[in-house]
Image 1: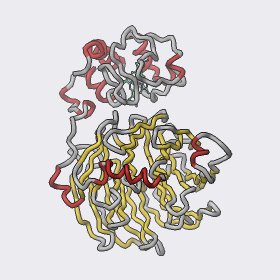
Image 2 (image 1 turned 60 degrees about the vertical axis):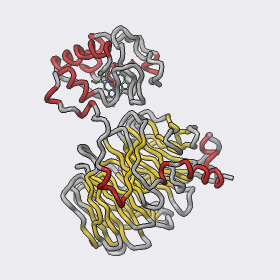
Image 3 (image 1 turned 90 degrees about the horizontal axis):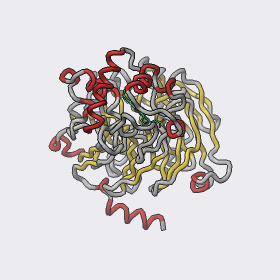
Image 4 (image 1 turned 180 degrees about the vertical axis):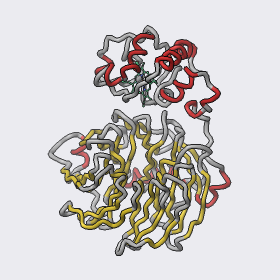
Length: 442
Ligand code: HEC
């Protein structure tokens, strides 16, 4: 039954097309991309949502209270996500979901065991890895029935853990952290068994192919290496001096490894020949944050600072050109703008529009802000604290908000901590907002 539905989805899925395409709809940068075995794509975004793309019309999975950093398919129709709100959430593909647990800092990666798919792992900047056992029924966990998931924590790293990977049989777990180490854990006992590498600089990304005996990693200093899983020795070094390495994806069919970096390049490595086969400037500016291959490895999907996911056929990447999209307002050359507008573009525009409609951004539209009671934009899901607030937005209250910082001015708001220290910057920003929130942005 499920299988028949999955096949029907494949026909409509943009993800199997061996051509260049984009997916549009998010209101913020794309932080992660996952691909189901039937080719369906999921995107995690700074706009607090996961986009699920059975066609180019997305289903939105909404519930996180902050940027979503990581998403993974548990099956073709079930997903798991992790967020800056520290939470781990389970979803079904019609949009229903539930928070099942939390870390004590942001969740950076989710890895699902391919062998025994009751098991998944999460890594977090709280320096731990958590192992989660869903138990017999994902559906029960989704509606909060029973005592699952069961959770065990792996502690030992001395700073944030950025990535995790299982061995093929899921008996071994590998973790990479900002403390510069790559550690090996026994899943049954939840104990660290080995320190495979000490890179010195923080390690951001990790791919494991234990059948072929190697682990690949990417680090903050640009280090890009393959290690022998047996000895920990470096068996290939692809470091090009571009940094940091921010994304890695592996095509298990074609055995190609893709590496994305802070300077906007995607490099493709043939892991059998141990040779770089492509090196492609994927963005004109800004980093490559998210990478994933289509199921057969024909296409590479990528995300970065734009709201748009790009997918290039690996064979003809160079023919399609890099991410261009609409130049995002917060990326305009700041030197050419008056101070108030510059303050807004740099510090606010990633989360707020000035026109009617919140446009899937992380915060509500600021259109007609002055004289408005706090928490009253209809298309936005505020925190309870803002909905119940008596504040009316005026030059004085906005000044207070950024003089003290939202966390002090409205304790409990989900607006992130941010102060604008200089009075003249606050004045210029408010002056700019006074005109721009009446006229709209452009
Ligand atoms: C990272 C995202 C983010 C950034 C950056 C940000 N905000 Fe917000 N802002 C939010 C969120 C989320 C809310 C809703 C808070 C809630 O519901 O508790 C909010 C709410 C507000 C509100 C209240 C709106 C209302 O309808 O009551 C104002 C005013 C505001 N922000 C102004 C600003 C300004 C000005 C800046 C730049 C200096 C800024 N914000 C930067 C996320 C952000």
